[in-house]
Amino acid sequence: MSHLSTVRHARGFSIVELMISVVIGLLALLFATRLMVGGEQNRQAALGGSDSMQNGMLAMFSISNDVAQSGYGLNDPLLAGCNTVFADTQGYALAPATRAGAPITPLGAAIIESNGTAPDRITLYAGSSMSGTGTLRVTADYTVGTQISVDRIPYGFSPQDVIVVAPETVGGNCALAEISSVAPVSNQQSLSVASGTGYRFNAGALGATFSGGKARLFNLGRFDKLSFHSWSVADGFLQLRATDLAGAGAAPSTVIDNVVSIKAQYGFDTRVGTGFQPQGGNQVAQWSPTMIDADSDGTAGSAGDYQRIAAIRIAVVARSKAPEKPDASGACSATTVLPTVFATASPSNVAAVPMTVDVTVAGDPISWKCYRYRVFETIVPLRNASWRP
Image 1: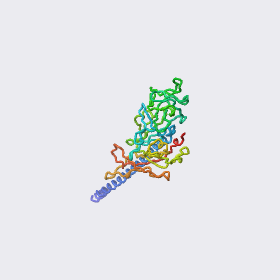
Image 2: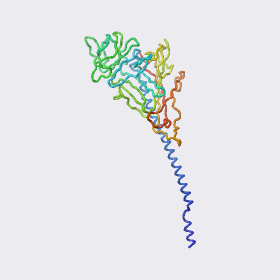
Image 3: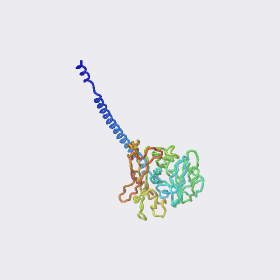
Image 4: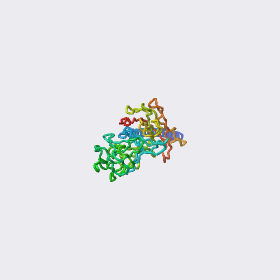
């Protein structure tokens, strides 16, 4: 009996053996958990990088495409940089700027509202007229009213086309309006800008005065094809205000998420005198986020300065969609320093003007250091600025 009892007792596990097995199992579970967590973190980091790559590239493509088209129909020296009277029944407003300390709303290929380390607002203008810069001469003084007398039958000008009237002496104000009719009045060839349903821009009056024989009228194409776009960033979203996008005139429409900043710089051609030959091509000699006295006339932001913008340098900063987890102390280290853009000299003989970008998003309770960021940069020549009369 004693022998049988000993044999039965030998068949089981001791408490020590059970404890060792539990410890080994817990260690294996710990290693497996850490492996899974590490794999998930790597997956999230990879997906976050993919998100920022996709969003940044889409934002850059959208803005740079607008820059490439900007200035079409607005490249005449009488228009580029002209302070313009503008009103839109759907709420779009021209970008503000200053000239000799005074506020203006200039026409031009590009208007940059530089905001230091915060996101800029980039406004880009382009027409759609097939004639490019089709013009008429204003033959009678205009002070008020809906009729504009012109020097010939207005072939190529149709109702709901957008026109800009500009003085032939650079320095006066321009006015943008929408044609309501092209019928001759009192045996004179004329255009009408009467108010009415469907007429958006400066309906009923130009809002500026012009002398007969000393002003020209330019056609920018159909009102619904007028490409006036303003790009901005708010709360981590790339936004667009546009004249040719329904519902985006007064308030911007959200285009892309997780874009935390856009920055831009003008590339000026600073050649002086006879050295400045835009018909032979513009050259970038100086980068600046704000207007400078590029034509050396003593005034920064004059019409001549807008005509010397040869290129626009753009930067887009996008972040990962998901933040990375902080360490045991609660601090994040996915990103430790704010991004810097425009740090490379391009062209090689033109000094770079680096800019630090603040990537914090208002209202986001998570620190900016918990996200990963990608910076996209490009330089877009203003080809339409060189193709001028």
